[in-house]
Length: 185
Image 1 (cartoon, rainbow, N blue to C red):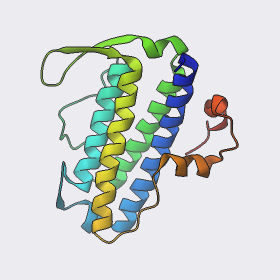
Image 2 (spheres, rainbow, N blue to C red):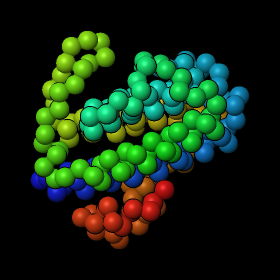
Image 3 (cartoon, rainbow, N blue to C red):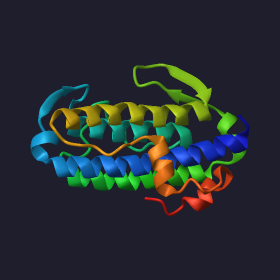
Image 4 (cartoon, rainbow, N blue to C red):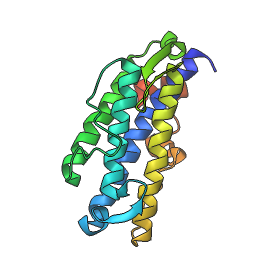
């Protein structure tokens, strides 16, 4: 994959991420507090706990990518105990992810990033791998939230990448994804 392909790929994933999170938070809001607040045996306890975890880890991983501390306290930190406040923070940070990815130059993706590991020690990996992990981690935990909502009897819209692409218009050329999708929410 060339550097130009990395830029297009991650610009697409950043916008897909923002779109999928918007749909997921809308589904949580529709399901109601009786579904998203209680402990449901999810990896991070509740739907709300899992949604908080995603945001916390996004802050950690994007911070590693851009060399900025977004305030990581711990894996199970509750940034917001209220879904509406968390949704607002999520939307704001999704915009920050899109902006950060759009600001990367083609040569940045191969750059090796050294960072502190939460359990101690350091790691060195290429920036593209850190971004890939950030988006993969979100997808993993969105699946857990989707499962919890589905088990509670709520229908969830498709959060698939191809569903996103179809929703925004596949007629846009992949190489112009940043321009053609700049206003996609």
